[in-house]
Amino acid sequence: MKNFARYRWVVIAIFFMFMLLHETDRLMIGSMQIPIMGEFKLTNSQWGLINSGALIVATILYPVWGYLYDRYARAKLLALASFIWGATTWLSSIMRSYIPFLATRASTGIDDSSYPGLYSLVADYFAPGLRGRVYGLLQLAQPLGYLLGMVLALMVAPMIGGWRSVFYITASLGLVIAVLIFFFVRDIPRGRAEPELEGVKELQKFRFSWTEAKLAVQKKSMWFIFGQGFAGVFPWNVITFFFFGYLISERGYDNNSVLFTMAPVILILAVGYFIGGALGDLVFKRTLNGRVIVSSAGVLLGAIFLFFAIRTPAADRTQFFILMCLTALFMPFSSPNVLSAIYDITLPEVRSTTMSVEYFIENSGAALAPFLAGLLADATSLETSILVICISTWVVCFVIYLGALFFVPNDIRALRGQLRRRAETELASQSASG
Image (cartoon, rainbow, N blue to C red):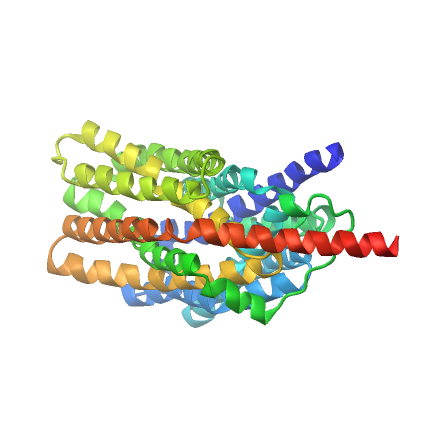
């Protein structure tokens, strides 16, 4: 048992490296916009297609990956996803004309929809009371990967031969991570970490069921989770695609000022994932609505601090920086808690599929957000666009979370009862055969 407790943290270390380097590879293309557009002589619309292609491919494949993860060995599929990441990035890096580059860059979206299996496997290594902080720890990799990508694109690439050389590095690392996952990460029975199944020595392999998958997405609490998933990605994508331009064009920042302002903000954002997950676990021990409470507090406080940050006069950079740091701290509170909440109310054998549906809905919102933000910015200003879209969608998320409070506890109790009945059946069967 002690060896298993240590081993699962080895798995988390491997998964953290996978997510960190994968996010670095996926996000750093944004920092390479100028050299790539210059080499291929692209228009803005052609550049937009490059970024949209991978997003569309990932959105389409979320249900496919979710189904495969619930049917087959998740560790081996994750190794395959890492191999695909390395191979497709390598292919896109050797292309010398626009159309082949567009196609191969879109193919990098194949592995972008692979996270549901990773999170599902982690749920079987860690009991519900620990999952929030573990997911928060893993999700630190996303903003850190973004920062690492900026460093590689802006500082390393010019020194080693340009943007292609950096992609060769991240592609090679994807292949290395694939080997690590294949040989060092073990799949374990679905549901192994559930407290209700703790006394069952030989846990049967729960099989994927379309009926159970359908029942999972039809739960009333899931409707609220899906709703906040669609609305909740709007602020993230608006800030990702427009905030740097806003700082330069409307607040008078230069490139160095943007870097020195946003780097600490992104680091605080990373810490917010872990703090949000840990708080969710803590409050969850006191009430089954704990994760929803922490999530709702995060979106409300994030909206408040962002509003006051944006309304701060451009000359007062210190106040703006402090308020943006506070915004960044609370923004990610929802992420690890929503993930944990989904696994609190769904059966182990359909968790990847359910999570994939959530990501499919989120990506649908993600694809819509930049377009709407651009239209509103053209009609008014970037400041107005950021404020209106971020604040309004966070308020919608807060209202949705209030509705979820009425349904989440009952769905958690229902799942626990179902797992207890499974445990009783298993124990009776093992006793009769013994």
